[in-house]
Image (cartoon, rainbow, N blue to C red; front, side):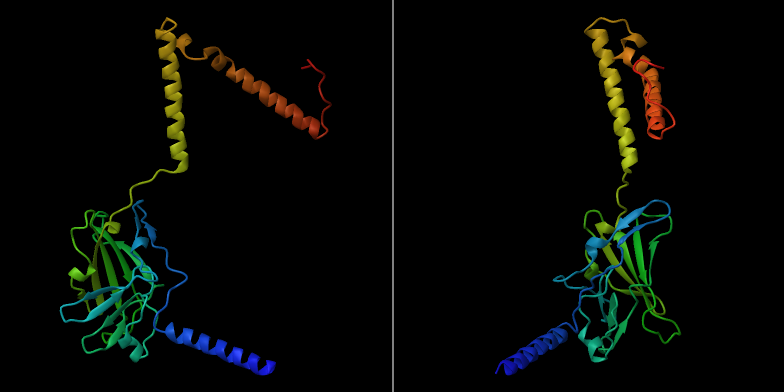
Length: 267
């Protein structure tokens, strides 16, 4: 009886695994997606990661003037392979699929063959272009490729992917129009070192300026270098630093056994 129960449990587990595999065959989420941040040599940066479709968010859908449909993801493969592709056993994981109006299917590029460019060379504020290459072989003797053109749309007035036709730029090269705020360059950010330097000199200026103002107005000191705050300390600072360095040097030499500890008050 115990043996029978064990066999039944294993059979149930196997059926559950099989069901899960079948349910996931046409829908998948990548554990890894390509880096959706990019910085050009001129320092202009873009971050398209908010556009990536993940679990629970349907893929983008566009169409061309012939009525062909395009299923698209950004910086990742599509979440769901179109059924027309599955019927044709074209279950290649790809970021963009074309489903023609005669139900034929093509994948238009591979995620690991992507490149970044400006939509218009030298004009980063027009937008950025993400190109996927090495798609399905084309009759013209080349592989298909697709360009996702992320136009800079700060105010969201240009519409969405579905408002624009997918166009054919040249044989086997497709262009998808993506109006989005993420097609705009990221604001320039300062490094931590730069921020520290700015804060340091700002604080130093406030300290010197504030101390000078107090000494002149409150204590009626004549306006000169002597009215700077803690002027005697700053005059003695070089000597204090010298004494500190000598003390540290002596301590190291003693620690290494090259010198006996100095007697109190000795030089």
